[in-house]
Length: 328
Image 1 (tube, one colour):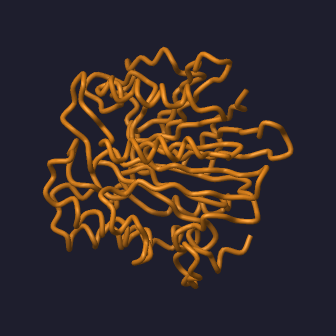
Image 2: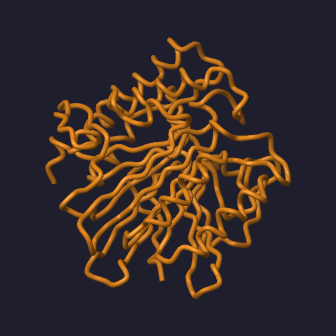
């Protein structure tokens, strides 16, 4: 696939040889695969990017914690992003793949930070600079960094919705909100006009699993979690959640009540995993085994099938495939 030139909002941009630009709203060639990951400490190694680049994913999705910049000055945060961006293996990946992303607490502000963080506008611009977001992009001007993308022609159309769980986030509680009303309305609109064969929903934290004690997940926002699930119940089509944050990989699922299964595929972290710490962490929704190694996730699409066939793969950053599951 040639990713040198993209059409963005009707304007043609020429990509630099090192870094791709924002993906187009439409693309004639469907994505055959994509990879995603989260939790990448800028000081804990970067050679693993060669193993990801070797697989040649058509797209890469960041699901938060691109860097760990807690309480960094803007200059220090920018330096951390440059360290990731200039890693030779990452440059190789970006030269061949679309790069998309949303943030989480450590690249947004500090651990467990929410809407009260005073530096979020500056953090937003630094994060979008890292993604090479064009100056004209709506993400530069809107509150928050949520975004939606479309890949492929009719009949082989993939939609990707990336949520922002930091900019509007309230303090956790039974009736607390995680997305903010404007983003909820935007999300509902994107789902209502969705004509894709498959829609991916990118969430920096897990939506389905109940999570471990003290761990961030949508279960700490039960009203928001139920609102999201109700939106998906009312929206026909095939949806798949991609999530990060937990420093391990697992696949969870629940029935939506109409014969559809909703799957949450978690991949974390790229540079550090916490095996012993989560040994007693229970997840009754888990399918298969949890992978407690440094990892990234991979999705492969079979567009010859109706509905589209999807295979989920759990890869170690060492370049080894540890597990896979074909969606029903």
